[in-house]
Length: 178
Image 1 (cartoon, rainbow, N blue to C red):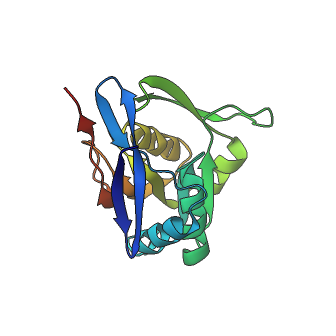
Image 2: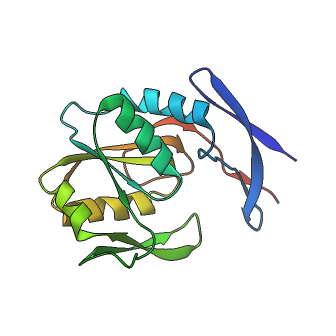
């Protein structure tokens, strides 16, 4: 199996290269279960949190571990936006997103009780990987609908071209084959 080296701080991993669309291959980053890589990324990203940051905002599933580690280091709470509606949700904020990376559209859901935690807060968006930036833009819309102000867009990895200014730690390639 072909692999690609990624490095954050002193931690290097050789991740598998997978085909996501015909002729398009990417290094597959899996943070969940890799405590050392998550810790290295969290320690590096916390240094980029603006001092006015009140809360971290992330999505399920993969970036949760990163936001959790950043929360433990910084003492800032975090809120998770869901990718599916849960039965317990009351009057959720709903935001459609067109994900170019996944090639399908999806919906983001934030329960009103979680939205209340964001009202008037300065939030930092936390992602594991940002490609086109479409999902991050949708998360920013959720934050604004909840009454929050986005003060930072942070990602461990960046891939491709994003329309948003994002602070990231490592660039990873999109590999095309003929």
